[in-house]
Length: 390
Image (cartoon, rainbow, N blue to C red):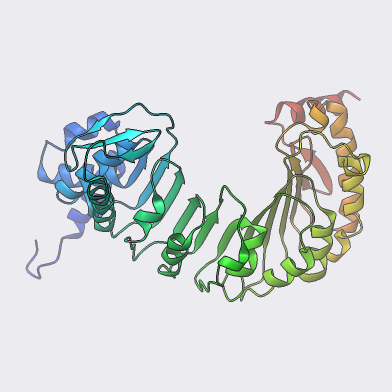
């Protein structure tokens, strides 16, 4: 320490260098470094527990005990992921704070008397442990092994910026979101259909990125600062003109829009062209294995897109892809010939367009007025070689 009581710059530099070094050290060695000195312990603890990922019920128990019993651990946690996927789990005693609680079918059930008391103690323990991690900025919850609704009812993270919620959106989850107006990145992937009537409009003024079902767009976008949206639709019967109007109610213009559905939806593309003229990135992803209707096949949809491209005068990237091979067949080199012809037409219709990924899933880029595929992709490399040989 210097005479002014401030930490010397050289000491700060040493700590920062050690932090970068420790990030490259294997986890097993970090545990050993914790025992080397107080300085090493504080830095190693920060590296070990900055990001916590819990994938089993046992992980949750051990984590809670650590957060509450080891000094300084709760203060360094920034990213918390709880993904409980275990099902049909054999009964397993959990010792420590609640020795009589067992696991059955992935959920907590006390095996003896005073069931409510044991469950209450367990959830109170988890809430207490999570609340002690007040510096959490990113929270990811999914799976059915724990009653997350019960836990969220008593939790608050003052610095929360990113929330991913892959569980049914119930009253406690809604209250939890409303208690965190600092959220900037929100992803909601509920496993069941949502009833919009049960969800009040939520004004998250700091929200800049939203991903979720189409039903939730009117609940979260108006009044926010969203510039990036990902919407998921189980059918193409949504009122996309209404959705586009709701997106337009963000205080910032929408720059990026990603759509995932059973099929590509031209009506959404048309609604975007009418209402979201400042869009820069537009992504369509189909999850359907086989397009039964010929009018929904890639060539037809891609041709139909030509009608809206002149209206999108700021579009830089357009993706039209599938989560599986088109028509159930792997793409061939000749498919890239068709895509190249389409992209040549699109260049005239939308001069700002410089990047595209089409059903072959090969990324195309435009440079010097020519479209070329990504040669790190095997198919793209074969196409370039075939062109050179012509």
